[in-house]
Picture: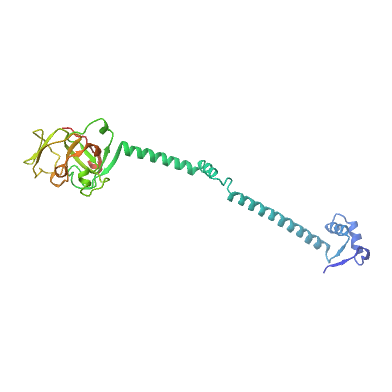
Length: 274
């Protein structure tokens, strides 16, 4: 039980204050000094317990104050992180430009541009969708088509070429993006004829050990016009080629077959030599 009395009417506990004046080093006396400074005497059953209670109270208040300060500091830091330093578009761009994500994007864009340029102007892979070039190619085989030599070297008999469909095929419903693959059998100015299962160029029979079977049709003779070539499939009787839709403009040729790389067991060069 705690009682409060005026300093002018101290009774019953005066001997305690006097006692504290005698033992100044004790916690009890220090507590009593505080009481005097406040102009008030607190009377408790145990002055030592009163001091401990006061100390705990002050410690709790100090801890609460520090906790509030730390909480406010954390709140300020969080607000600072969430708030953009520069809300302008320029600031956002500058911030992104210096990030690791930007470096990754630059590396990807560079690699993509190189790969795209390489595929567009130098070489690209192609796969075979039909049996028109069997036995040279089966369905699913893959080859590399090079696009460089067509700019300084003409197309010759025996070359395997990949080309965009000419106007005759567009009129029959094919799209410009549809690519065909055939073998050149006649160059511009050549006289081409097919008879008796044999291909004749300029009156000479061609030796063709790469075809699936002898052609069972007759065609020609016809002269290959300027800027054109004649192309046939190696599977002569199962190929939709020049003997059905006409000559191929050289400008439609995408590139020349250079290398068959799939399947791995049939890896070989496609450069033809008689």
